[in-house]
View 1 (cartoon, rainbow, N blue to C red):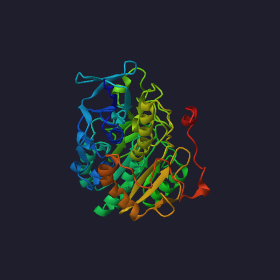
View 2: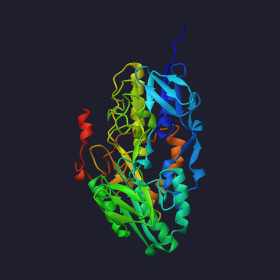
View 3: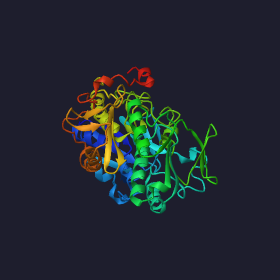
View 4: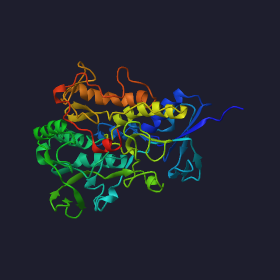
Length: 430
């Protein structure tokens, strides 16, 4: 009698779930491994593209495709919200009534926006003078608002960390400077970037570079501001320390948390709805047959698409090893890189991992893209990535010469060691 195939169930049909499903489909025959993907809708959004929508640089229909069409043949797709996971019974309940069992579970449901967690954010001025560009509704509404915005106080506010793509709010500030300059109204608009961090970014060298860029562009930087309330009637941000920042237009990045079903699944997630995960192997700490990929994990890496890509290479190797009963030997080093749009057809690039902060130099080799330096080639790299995303990354193709580990070749090694290993990485024994 033929042996039944193992069952891999993937929760989430975004970047992580899709690339992992496609990579594993190529590694296993259908008779060896059944792969099913679950998501609440069938709209796969290229999330980096949301940044461009408010400035008319991308149309919504250009950055959305059907999720099931991105999956290789032989992968099942279930369109339903998730009700809960029973980590003891190895089952997942869907809101459409289905109950799916699994041998291996991969959680890749990302992080979700929680505007309701900040008083006044989705109040009377929501999508009137208070916006976010982190979802399609907000980005599209903000495009209409910016068309008519010609004077006043523009405030970009990060409520708290972690957030998806931590550099995107800075990119918005830089693009707003460009956009308003092109409109001829920049002198009539004050732009202020408000962050809970003690600098423009989390890493010292990059933070200094980005703060200098903000200053050069006449963008005010307000640090260590923890927003307690968005006062709709008074049109101002109110901090827990009672500082106030007035606005005519507020672009706010809401608090992020894990998917709602995580809280309804005993033993699955932490108090924020993220899954406790080994920082190196991407195996969950809640059950050995549960793995986590992308923003759903509590690892101290940036919640950026590049991280999901690099994690995915490691995760696929380790799921393959787990199914075969072998030790998990592939290790993720926290590698992340991000293009940062700075306006006027320029961008800079940062590359870092758990232990080493962004450094100047070139990526991925000594002859390559400039790091921590504005250039047109970085801008073109950012624009070209969308095509690679749909045709290379999601289908599970490798990038020649680029692996999951952060390369040190081409970087200014005099600054190596300036970064530190996060305490949470050490605490997990990595």
